Length: 115
Length: 113
Image (cartoon, rainbow over all chains, first blue to last red; front, top):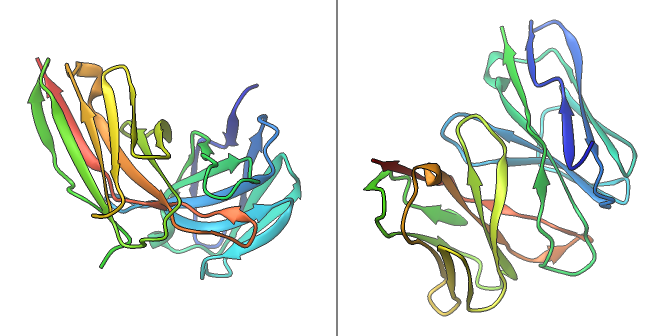
Protein backbone atom coordinates (compact mmCIF):
# COMPACT_ATOMS: atom_id res chain seq x y z
CA UNK A 1 0.00 0.00 0.00
CA UNK A 2 1.21 3.47 -0.78
CA UNK A 3 0.08 6.97 0.08
CA UNK A 4 -2.89 7.50 2.34
CA UNK A 5 -5.64 4.90 2.63
CA UNK A 6 -9.06 5.20 4.22
CA UNK A 7 -11.72 2.66 5.16
CA UNK A 8 -14.55 2.28 4.67
CA UNK A 9 -15.01 4.15 1.42
CA UNK A 10 -18.77 4.40 1.91
CA UNK A 11 -20.79 4.28 5.12
CA UNK A 12 -24.50 4.56 5.79
CA UNK A 13 -25.53 4.78 9.41
CA UNK A 14 -28.52 5.60 11.53
CA UNK A 15 -28.48 8.37 14.07
CA UNK A 16 -28.14 5.95 16.98
CA UNK A 17 -25.27 3.91 15.53
CA UNK A 18 -21.61 4.00 16.52
CA UNK A 19 -19.00 3.58 13.81
CA UNK A 20 -15.35 4.42 13.22
CA UNK A 21 -13.45 5.72 10.22
CA UNK A 22 -9.88 4.58 9.75
CA UNK A 23 -6.97 6.28 8.04
CA UNK A 24 -3.46 4.96 7.47
CA UNK A 25 -0.54 6.80 5.91
CA UNK A 26 2.46 5.01 4.36
CA UNK A 27 4.52 8.16 3.70
CA UNK A 28 6.47 8.40 6.95
CA UNK A 29 4.78 11.69 7.80
CA UNK A 30 4.49 13.10 11.30
CA UNK A 31 1.19 14.99 11.09
CA UNK A 32 -2.32 13.79 10.24
CA UNK A 33 -5.57 15.63 9.68
CA UNK A 34 -9.33 15.05 9.46
CA UNK A 35 -11.35 17.26 7.11
CA UNK A 36 -15.06 17.41 6.34
CA UNK A 37 -16.26 18.32 2.86
CA UNK A 38 -19.96 19.04 2.43
CA UNK A 39 -21.54 19.65 -0.96
CA UNK A 40 -20.45 22.94 -2.54
CA UNK A 41 -18.49 24.01 0.55
CA UNK A 42 -14.75 24.36 1.12
CA UNK A 43 -12.91 21.71 3.06
CA UNK A 44 -13.34 22.25 6.78
CA UNK A 45 -10.48 21.27 9.06
CA UNK A 46 -11.72 19.19 11.98
CA UNK A 47 -8.70 17.83 13.85
CA UNK A 48 -4.92 17.90 13.60
CA UNK A 49 -2.45 15.52 15.17
CA UNK A 50 1.22 16.43 15.14
CA UNK A 51 3.64 13.84 16.50
CA UNK A 52 0.61 11.89 17.78
CA UNK A 53 -0.58 14.80 19.89
CA UNK A 54 -3.82 16.59 19.10
CA UNK A 55 -2.93 20.18 18.34
CA UNK A 56 -6.19 21.45 16.95
CA UNK A 57 -9.84 20.77 17.57
CA UNK A 58 -11.72 23.13 15.31
CA UNK A 59 -14.93 23.52 17.35
CA UNK A 60 -16.08 20.08 16.30
CA UNK A 61 -19.10 18.60 18.15
CA UNK A 62 -18.30 15.92 20.69
CA UNK A 63 -20.18 13.30 18.63
CA UNK A 64 -16.93 13.18 16.61
CA UNK A 65 -14.02 11.75 18.57
CA UNK A 66 -10.55 11.37 17.03
CA UNK A 67 -7.86 8.94 18.06
CA UNK A 68 -4.24 8.75 16.93
CA UNK A 69 -2.54 5.64 18.37
CA UNK A 70 0.69 6.20 16.39
CA UNK A 71 2.04 8.41 13.63
CA UNK A 72 0.69 6.16 10.86
CA UNK A 73 -2.88 5.65 12.01
CA UNK A 74 -5.79 7.97 12.65
CA UNK A 75 -9.36 7.14 13.59
CA UNK A 76 -12.55 9.14 13.75
CA UNK A 77 -15.13 7.62 16.09
CA UNK A 78 -18.73 8.56 15.34
CA UNK A 79 -21.78 8.33 17.58
CA UNK A 80 -25.30 9.78 17.58
CA UNK A 81 -24.70 11.68 14.37
CA UNK A 82 -27.18 13.99 12.70
CA UNK A 83 -28.29 13.98 9.04
CA UNK A 84 -26.36 17.23 8.49
CA UNK A 85 -23.17 15.30 9.27
CA UNK A 86 -23.52 13.52 5.93
CA UNK A 87 -20.44 14.51 3.94
CA UNK A 88 -17.13 13.31 2.54
CA UNK A 89 -14.60 12.82 5.36
CA UNK A 90 -11.03 13.17 4.21
CA UNK A 91 -7.85 12.22 5.97
CA UNK A 92 -4.54 13.86 5.07
CA UNK A 93 -0.94 13.67 6.19
CA UNK A 94 2.13 15.88 5.91
CA UNK A 95 5.72 16.04 7.05
CA UNK A 96 5.88 19.06 9.31
CA UNK A 97 9.15 20.64 10.24
CA UNK A 98 9.74 23.60 8.00
CA UNK A 99 7.23 26.40 8.46
CA UNK A 100 5.07 26.99 5.44
CA UNK A 101 6.51 24.40 3.11
CA UNK A 102 4.64 21.20 3.75
CA UNK A 103 2.08 19.92 1.31
CA UNK A 104 -0.69 17.68 2.55
CA UNK A 105 -1.56 14.43 0.84
CA UNK A 106 -5.10 13.14 0.98
CA UNK A 107 -6.72 9.75 1.24
CA UNK A 108 -9.67 8.84 -1.01
CA UNK A 109 -12.20 9.76 1.67
CA UNK A 110 -15.17 8.09 3.32
CA UNK A 111 -18.55 9.14 1.96
CA UNK A 112 -20.85 9.15 4.98
CA UNK A 113 -24.63 9.20 4.86
CA UNK A 114 -26.57 9.59 8.10
CA UNK A 115 -30.20 8.53 7.92
CA UNK B 1 -14.04 38.69 4.05
CA UNK B 2 -13.27 35.03 3.39
CA UNK B 3 -9.72 33.92 4.05
CA UNK B 4 -9.40 32.46 0.55
CA UNK B 5 -11.72 33.51 -2.26
CA UNK B 6 -12.18 31.98 -5.69
CA UNK B 7 -14.61 32.45 -8.53
CA UNK B 8 -16.71 29.25 -8.42
CA UNK B 9 -17.18 29.18 -12.21
CA UNK B 10 -17.90 27.04 -14.06
CA UNK B 11 -15.43 27.97 -16.76
CA UNK B 12 -16.55 26.23 -19.95
CA UNK B 13 -13.74 26.23 -22.53
CA UNK B 14 -13.01 24.31 -25.75
CA UNK B 15 -10.08 21.95 -26.05
CA UNK B 16 -6.88 23.82 -26.80
CA UNK B 17 -7.96 27.01 -25.07
CA UNK B 18 -5.96 28.89 -22.46
CA UNK B 19 -7.76 29.54 -19.21
CA UNK B 20 -6.75 31.40 -16.07
CA UNK B 21 -8.10 31.31 -12.53
CA UNK B 22 -7.47 33.86 -9.82
CA UNK B 23 -7.57 33.48 -6.08
CA UNK B 24 -7.27 36.15 -3.38
CA UNK B 25 -6.26 35.66 0.24
CA UNK B 26 -6.73 37.87 3.25
CA UNK B 27 -3.73 37.14 5.48
CA UNK B 28 -0.76 39.13 4.23
CA UNK B 29 1.60 37.06 6.40
CA UNK B 30 0.77 33.85 4.52
CA UNK B 31 3.80 31.69 3.96
CA UNK B 32 3.07 29.42 1.05
CA UNK B 33 0.46 28.60 -1.50
CA UNK B 34 -0.78 25.60 -3.42
CA UNK B 35 -3.12 24.61 -6.19
CA UNK B 36 -4.93 21.32 -5.74
CA UNK B 37 -7.11 19.57 -8.28
CA UNK B 38 -10.23 17.69 -7.23
CA UNK B 39 -12.17 15.43 -9.57
CA UNK B 40 -15.84 14.77 -8.94
CA UNK B 41 -16.33 12.66 -5.79
CA UNK B 42 -12.59 12.15 -5.38
CA UNK B 43 -9.96 13.50 -3.01
CA UNK B 44 -7.95 16.68 -3.68
CA UNK B 45 -4.56 16.06 -5.29
CA UNK B 46 -1.65 18.46 -5.25
CA UNK B 47 -1.16 20.12 -8.61
CA UNK B 48 1.45 22.77 -7.86
CA UNK B 49 3.21 24.45 -4.98
CA UNK B 50 3.93 28.17 -5.23
CA UNK B 51 6.79 29.27 -2.99
CA UNK B 52 8.16 32.43 -4.59
CA UNK B 53 6.79 34.60 -7.37
CA UNK B 54 5.58 31.57 -9.27
CA UNK B 55 6.51 28.43 -11.13
CA UNK B 56 5.74 26.47 -14.26
CA UNK B 57 5.09 22.78 -14.84
CA UNK B 58 4.37 21.86 -18.43
CA UNK B 59 1.07 23.44 -19.46
CA UNK B 60 0.46 24.83 -15.98
CA UNK B 61 1.83 28.12 -14.65
CA UNK B 62 1.17 29.46 -11.16
CA UNK B 63 1.95 33.06 -10.21
CA UNK B 64 1.97 34.79 -6.87
CA UNK B 65 1.51 38.50 -6.28
CA UNK B 66 2.17 39.18 -2.60
CA UNK B 67 1.53 42.92 -2.87
CA UNK B 68 -1.99 42.36 -4.19
CA UNK B 69 -2.47 39.10 -2.28
CA UNK B 70 -3.52 36.96 -5.16
CA UNK B 71 -2.44 33.75 -6.82
CA UNK B 72 -3.25 32.71 -10.35
CA UNK B 73 -3.23 29.44 -12.26
CA UNK B 74 -2.87 29.44 -16.03
CA UNK B 75 -3.63 26.32 -18.07
CA UNK B 76 -2.49 26.32 -21.68
CA UNK B 77 -3.71 23.98 -24.42
CA UNK B 78 -6.60 22.65 -22.30
CA UNK B 79 -7.35 18.94 -22.47
CA UNK B 80 -10.61 17.17 -21.77
CA UNK B 81 -8.86 15.53 -18.83
CA UNK B 82 -8.27 18.96 -17.25
CA UNK B 83 -11.98 19.12 -16.37
CA UNK B 84 -12.07 19.26 -12.58
CA UNK B 85 -12.38 21.66 -9.66
CA UNK B 86 -9.23 23.62 -8.86
CA UNK B 87 -8.69 24.50 -5.22
CA UNK B 88 -6.61 27.44 -4.13
CA UNK B 89 -4.90 26.68 -0.82
CA UNK B 90 -3.05 29.04 1.49
CA UNK B 91 -0.79 28.30 4.43
CA UNK B 92 -1.30 31.38 6.64
CA UNK B 93 1.17 31.05 9.45
CA UNK B 94 3.12 28.22 10.96
CA UNK B 95 1.76 27.87 14.45
CA UNK B 96 1.47 25.20 17.08
CA UNK B 97 4.11 23.11 15.37
CA UNK B 98 2.14 22.26 12.26
CA UNK B 99 1.06 23.78 8.97
CA UNK B 100 -2.59 24.79 8.80
CA UNK B 101 -3.98 24.99 5.28
CA UNK B 102 -6.96 27.16 4.33
CA UNK B 103 -8.87 25.92 1.30
CA UNK B 104 -10.87 27.97 -1.15
CA UNK B 105 -14.22 26.64 -2.31
CA UNK B 106 -12.77 25.86 -5.73
CA UNK B 107 -13.20 26.88 -9.34
CA UNK B 108 -14.88 24.43 -11.68
CA UNK B 109 -13.40 23.92 -15.13
CA UNK B 110 -15.24 22.07 -17.90
CA UNK B 111 -13.30 21.48 -21.13
CA UNK B 112 -15.44 20.45 -24.08
CA UNK B 113 -14.52 18.98 -27.50
